[in-house]
Amino acid sequence: MKHAIVVVALLTFADGASSCSLSTSREFRVNRPLKEAQGADRILVKSLNFVPSMGGGTSCDGLGLLSIELEGKGVNTATMRKMGYFLRPKSGVVDEKLFPRHAIAPFVSASNSVSVSWGWSRATPTQDGEYHWVLELVPVTKQGTLMPGTEFCASSDNWCSSWAPAR
Image (tube, rainbow, N blue to C red; front, side, top):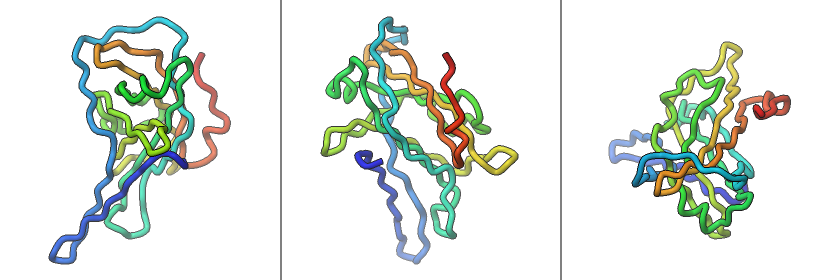
């Protein structure tokens, strides 16, 4: 994902031990009760970076990250920057508690692309050892207006190549 900014910061402590921390989207506060919007305007997933579980014997073992670059259909970048985004598991996620219940705020890159990211620790794979997640991205305004959601797929193998969104 060339425009999304994903930062993995390793923090080293004085005693030589280290821990790993992911920089992800912060909470986006909605000021009013949620209500559904009508219309064809949508925010789509332009590209994504999915790392379900880091390995390699580092202090980041088990940490996962999903970073999503967004694209507007009938929505300009300035509007997308002012919105929050719910990231909701639809299927395949064993531990739904990995995802926030609140909306998350976007990052805006130097090239003006808009993205969101979320990290977790210790996601559980399916019985075959893979991750086959169907998720929904739901934009929300500060006033609580929910735009239509967009389903997308994230997997640790080629499973998404045979997946089609529900109609």
